[in-house]
Length: 549
Image (spheres, rainbow, N blue to C red):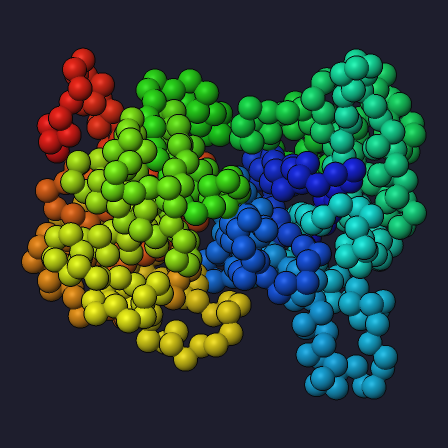
């Protein structure tokens, strides 16, 4: 069986447990140790699929179609490896499983209780990924903060595993905060002491403390933390604020987090870490040779985590192009025919983001029209592709009331319609077209040049699709379906001929972009935006948009 590391958090939320877990996993992986990460969330939703992005950030979809926490995106981007349904578990899923078993009579008339039935199910799922021979180490991030009522069963499960597993097979890393009081010019360790005390009262004692801090921790501070929290001084790890999350693995390497972890797990057979590609990526990220400005049009731009994978994909693609990508948020609700040129002025590219519902739809359509008519590189994802189809139908084909039946069920021209298999579905959670599906690309198309192949697989999360009843009209007018799922006939990619870069995809390419393998669509979109920027800035006088086409 694999060895297990549990990552918990204290003092406050949003300290970055996911980034620390992913960084430790990356360092272990770089030493040749097979590592995976899983996230246990204490909320009662079965999964984040029905949560508003303002509540929980983006919903990350795995290859096998699981709607999961956004931290799984960090795991994949750092490890360059796929996660699955088993890598994200919620309280809701735990209780759902236990209640279903009780209804089936699996407990033989026993009174079903939090201990042992809920904690036993938590432990079963915690150990699940380590039961085959695929991984040497399984890292489990426990969501929330120690002391939260809803998180107590997870902490109790960790306590039981600390007792049940051999000492060298179980390790607890606790992430905490060392605040700096500017008035006193002093770092304060008391919140960390209280956090560890609370952990100990629940029966779990941390082996390693990772301390988030704005100021460096000197040896005296580390010694004090070690003494009062009953850990070795070498196990007190400084985690200073970083300019990018991708610096954190190297920071943890300098602090020897991986070495201390291996020592405590009694692992002696490992290599020197190979982070060559990671360092090359960081070098390109820190020292770009050019800059582009991309407009991100969406509904949830007030919360950065709502489009987390898209923003990270731009970082990956920017580094590949040795270009800094500045993303400018543009709220679609405030775009109209009169101000669209002003709102999109100075942009080198336009990305229309995914989403659901009516709000801001007309603004997105107006923005797409501007990009199409003015040669501005355009990239639409999921709903963004659908907006491009609606705009083309209205303004090129003359279908004045063309729309999606999601927004207007009575439209005479439903160019976007609900998928047939979705029409009978009533339940909301986990019922969309989810996960990876194949796509066949037309030879000679822009998409084939981008992917350098005619067969790809990408991840989906949608209920609505391009209405193939209108396909011939669209293609005759210059908008081609360059990617199709042959089994279902679903249009996966649309693109415009006679445009520098205009492409929309029904799937979510951002979900598979990693540091080592940036999403090709993002890489080429940034490249096109660079070319547009060079043309735009090479003229001293105001440039007529037609000259850019």
